[in-house]
Image (cartoon, rainbow, N blue to C red):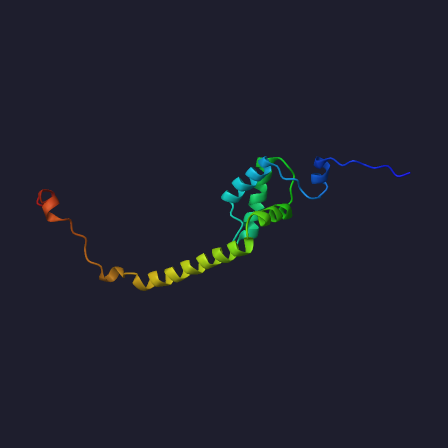
Amino acid sequence: MPTELSVSSDDQEMSGGEVIWDENMEMALFYASIKFKPVGMHKHFRMINLHRHFTKLSHTPCTIQDLWDKLGTMYDLQTLDEREDLGLFAEDEEMDEDEDRDFSFKHSEEFVLPLHDFDHLVTE
């Protein structure tokens, strides 16, 4: 006759099942995601640091995939990635415009103090 085994939520979290999120874990995830924003070009590297920071704060074992899944329920990660990438391209365009406006030091004028403020110091 088979016996039923009861599995506690702690055992379920440790075995790789679906993680049951509590308020402390969510706060740890928010703090970690503020410090290591998991979007953009380097999102996977940031997620590694986010996972380390989350583990220190929550003391609850959780995989990186569990963190991605939870963030996916709270945010539209694809849209955030696109928005982050658009910001990156906009910065590149601004840098190109700034390069056109760069001044050459060869044509710069010599710095002169305003005489009405510093006349007594210049004449000495």
